[in-house]
Image (cartoon, rainbow, N blue to C red; front, top):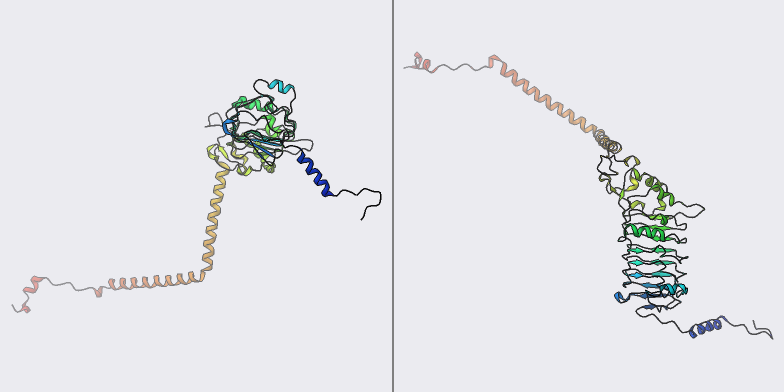
Length: 390
């Protein structure tokens, strides 16, 4: 439709698109940092993988970067405000200035970087960070305030990173998790944990906790209560495969909880008993609560049980059913061949009768005295007999 007189002609969508492209091209693109690779522009992905040459986070990361990956470096220590311009000499000054150098960064991956220490406020200056991955680093010390200033953090991955720190590192992690109210995903796989940090289970919006490949002997009643949620919040999922479960009486609450909430543990069918020896490698969900006995002080170890009553009775019942089935098959075979069996029995009876009649006839012949042979005359009498002609 032609425009009316006195009205400006409307701009088409093509013209608006050209104006936006021209505006974007008029702004100079931020350079890619030294020792790093930029894929699709700094706003998409920035990857730094320079081996041992990179000993601290790059300082010239573009402020509009959204994803930063540093893999295979030798960072060793993440000091306070490490990504906001802090260093060994002036981290307090940088933090005091409130230097937010990467306000749009949402994902930070720092795997395989030989990180041993994460100081308090190491991630200050990253207000939009939603995903942090510190997996596969030999962490030995973690500041209580290491994750402060991360109000939007939703995913924290610490897989294969806590095994060398011992109980002190686990206690520090438990305290460092307190401010992470928006945490959804927590990865603690492969850390040889004998128990889970209590604050990890208490995160109100936690959706999944990965605790595979640890040293968990089970979950106690307190842990199971901490996994419940009130106020309509969804309960978190829990990954527990490849843990050495101790199948004693202390495992009864976990067994009952799993049977009522199997969907909460996606790998529940992969859970196996490690102790006692009688239940080694048995599927945990297939156990009967009667088998989970408490050991006394003279037993071989906690959780040892003797499989006597229920299991032995089940074995006898199964053996009896097998024998009954065999007997039923035998009777069925006899019934189907009844005519042939009758003919065989008749022939056998006649053969036996003929045999017995033959034996009886020979006995009568041998017992008749008239058929007894005459005794032979002596040789001397035959020599002197007159009729002999000598």
